[in-house]
Structures are given as structure tokens and as C-alpha cells.
Image 1: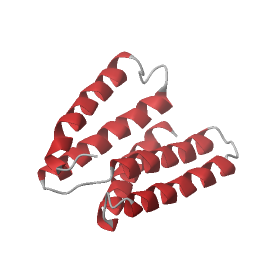
Image 2: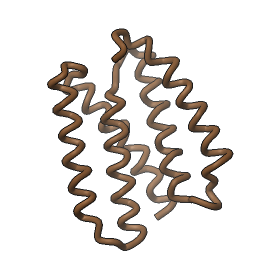
Image 3: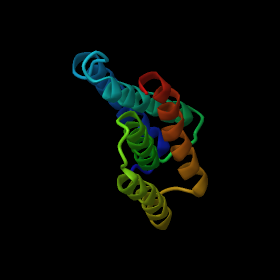
Length: 132
């Protein structure tokens, strides 16, 4: 865990560059449109978390990841017309487990967890309409 929120800036910038490289070189929109938009939304979530850092607001990166994955699996289930209710229920449960563990470890406040949840959900929901 990083003690100071300013120590998060460099890893998030590196993650942005690596995600851009991954999107441009490996996961193209022509070959894997679902994964392309998933990683593009992940890039947007990372940029949102980075912007929050400049305003001295810490978002839970764990909640961003788990909530984004949950929305992606829901979208994939709709896209493939598959009944993945057990996987979706498991991921919703994992959202709760991640949030409660971050609170128990005193790594985040409830506000930071909600900011992380929303930062993971909104880009995925926004880009969902492009590949559904």
C-alpha cells in the first residue's frame, strides 16, 4: 500500500501507457471488439482515478477493477445471450467482499470506495452501447 496519494500518480501513468499500447498493438477493435471496449473503459477509469489524484481525492483502484469486470460480464452475458447469472452473482458478491475488506484494513473510507465503484461502472456503462 502506498502511504501518500501522490505516490499513486506514476504507477497510474505507467498503467495508462501500457493500456494504450495494449489497445493499439494487440487488442484491436477489428479482432476483439468486446475486449477493445473493455480495455478502453479501463483506460478511462484509470484516467479518472488520475484526475481525482490531482484534486487530492483517492479512489479505490480495487473497486474500480471489480466493478468494471462485473459490468463487462453483464454486458457479455447480454451480448452472447447467455444465462451467466451465477457468475454475475459471484462478481456482485466479490464487489461486497472487496469493499468490506478495504474498510476492514482501513485502506479506504466509504467515500473512496463509492468513488472507485462509480469510476469503474460509468466508463463501462458508457462504452457498453458501442459493442452491444
